[in-house]
Length: 200
Image (cartoon, rainbow, N blue to C red; front, side, top):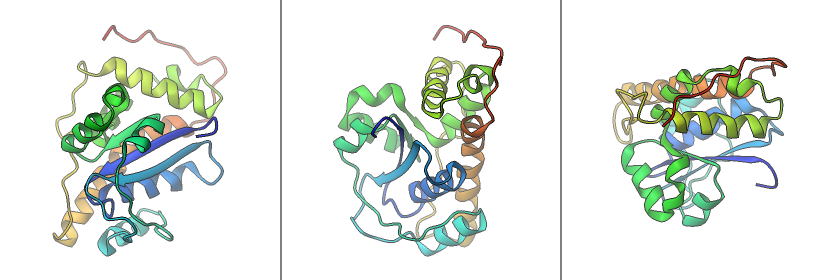
């Protein structure tokens, strides 16, 4: 990603969950950020717009759906991603099947949110460079995998369901992204204490 950091969100059709997550992340990261958020779907049809109810939930949360189109997940996208966040465990399995070496940097969105909340903040915000900070967050989360568990690792698919289902999915995504995006966007701390993570 030309020296940047690439977060890839993955779901099934790339018109609801991963699309919402991508655009929510972009709204927080802001234009010109070296941390880039994109998305794809394991069974996506290329070129479809975001589902209307997903668009409404995104707008309610402050995101912008303009210009979004779906695309299928490929091994190439996985290879170039520094962090892959999947809507559900089945999507994580699909990512790893395409590129097994990505297993260490692939999580579900909800799982990564739980892990990020457990990461000692000083180990991440001590890095003023956003790309180094993002890499540190992934490393810290990886070290806690298996030690900190998510009770709800999957985001339920709202496609074809009620407005309430979309609201629940959007809220789950937003809550899961709050901790990692908060760490990435916090003001750098020059002498933030660094805590040794427990051995994996």
